[in-house]
Length: 305
Ligand code: GDP
Figure 1 (tube, protein in one colour):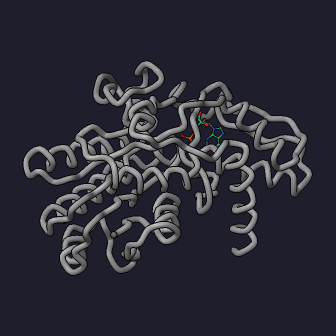
Figure 2 (cartoon, rainbow, N blue to C red):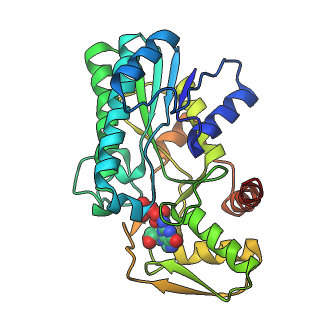
């Protein structure tokens, strides 16, 4: 099985999950050796390796600020990766492919919880529409290859993810990593204020990446449908509450300042997980446990730099 994007937070979790619990050989390739935005290199590599199953977790990712600063990178690189890998996988007869989307594919004002049927029913959230359009194209590619060629290519959109190997660079990170890093720093340096972007009112759902990896393996074994399926926990929390929970776990007692010059993004992003639950899969890692584990991983990651 080829895990594309194995150095990222998602890909590395999928590799850990496969190595711990599945009897299959795991193929990986570094970006230095094969740039997946490069069509020829990607095709050559897939033809050489002929994987049986592909998990497409490679992507250009980033938080709310990075997305609005680098729109061409986000749409271009993600379109290229999806097209190159999916087309080449069809060409060599890959038996199963799972493409990972994102819940930002849903319209900004779709009713919550976000059901799979809401896809393409309204305008996207502008702060991440570049990334979202590329991810929608990836989902559509899987559907199109299924319809036209009968390929068993599936796709799934995880809700906001967190866990080991996250990106802690404050300019490009997502909120969980950003707040863990900021609050850990505040504790270390005895600072009394941490700045949170936006109003703190938006709500987000958070899935631990080890749960996601487990869901990916489950779907490869148990799901074969053109509908791109949601992966989440079915529960959300406001950014203000999240900041307070992280502060409690880290053991920092300061105050939060809300920088409303930064965007809030979409007001809420809770996914409807009834489809996934009906197949028999549920997330297991609670938010406090997941944050505790991620904070420990963060401390190790910082020590080993
Ligand atoms: P989104 O889920 O695509 O909007 O991406 P993010 O994870 O980057 O942001 C989620 C929410 O957290 C937004 O409302 C941000 O404004 C808010 N937020 C608060 N503090 C931070 C921070 O330090 N970094 C980031 N990336 N988001 C923050």
